[in-house]
Image 1: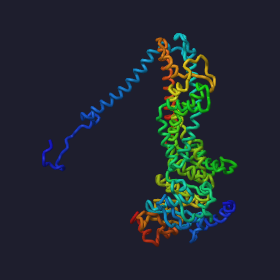
Image 2 (image 1 turned 90 degrees about the horizontal axis):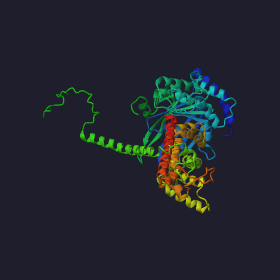
Image 3 (image 1 turned 135 degrees about the vertical axis):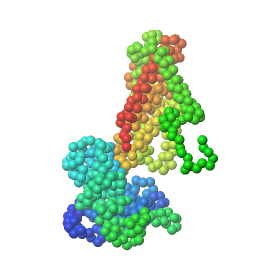
Image 4 (image 1 turned 135 degrees about the horizontal axis):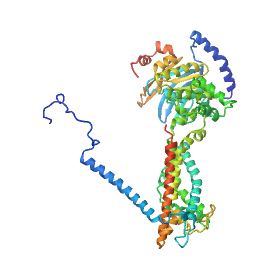
Length: 291
Length: 304
């Protein structure tokens, strides 16, 4: 990860054009330009293989949704994309997860740096027991980012997360005073503040009401211009609404041991997955016949 | 009356008032059990009240400013507990300084950094639990042996007493701190780590500050236990008659429990009254410390 500046510069120039094209014509390249790429990824917890043989590309400035029934390994896969799984005892990853072409599980890679570049928003809003301001400033402070003016950075992150207008007069108040939806947007703002390349979202709306959910979905559309987003969701309508591409996972029983393991069934543009799925299992799932 | 052969469908329930006034407990066994519970409470509470009232009555004559300002004397009407008060303060303060950082550090290591599946760490964890139940006099003997090994001649000094009391309450502080750390939700740690914070930063800036109220409560309760201890200090040869103010960690000392012990052993009635008055003082300090602990817990403990 030595060529950060170069990558950032590249990212700043190309994708914008990309997006304007898409916004006007609904254009989406057939193949994603992979920022994160999974090659034959298996994820284990001890002896249990939670995810088996996943090949997947997460495209630059695209929203990719991971859907599937409970226990299909989609959250596990998501957590292996920024090495959060390292924190679980006995968790390990086989195969390669490439981030900008580099194996993020390589021996010289610092997981701290991986997590700084690939942020994560959790299922339950988890603001820190600090002020709104300090929630945002925490990431830049601990990662040693060079910040010229922290106030500006806080305002920028909150603005991007569509929260600035609601909290600008109470930045010094505890984040615990915010509603659930506001807390989740604060968590998104907190993630943005460390300027990651990718944002992983693990069912970010499952604890929120429909109005708060809509706001987060709108926010994701805005954030796509600058970030690559991967979202795990149980809500198929949500996947259909927000995602450019969708990956459908299911749980298969291993023939030898009978243990269930998650596999990728089908990956494609969201329109294709929802309108013309190639696999019968995908069709059954999205039409509500199982899962 | 239920008749044999009547079907459920045909049964009409008689109207019954819901306000029966018996709190739902009307079976004799349940009532008897309740009475036993109340009696148990009464016995425990009665003993405590009797004790407090007795020492207050015994000690009221001697509970004057003289108790705070005067040195011990052979005349009970001129004697006071000033060196014992100062000695207790010195010993407890030294104990706090020695134990609290050590206990917190050990707990943080066990809870946040140590591999919990490692057999060695499991052994340590088990031992910490057991150490909390070891009688205090054993720690006195341990400190005595340790100081003898170091060739310390005068073992009746503040730092030596504090060492014994530290050994006594260290496991208690470790356990209390671990409980407090465990009460901090995993989501907070994960949120911090997901931003690119290190484990160390996460512990130092998120987990530990959130656990401070619990740690403070546990530490105060542990110190109040140390304050009431006499046995380990007597083993170390703490002085029973001190006619000077302790003035440092190498100074000789006595403490309130030792002073009480000493006066109780004297034949004169006046000294027994002094012991009772000093007991009232010691109890008062303990109540204040425990009250402070409860206040901190209620006021600052976070609800997640």
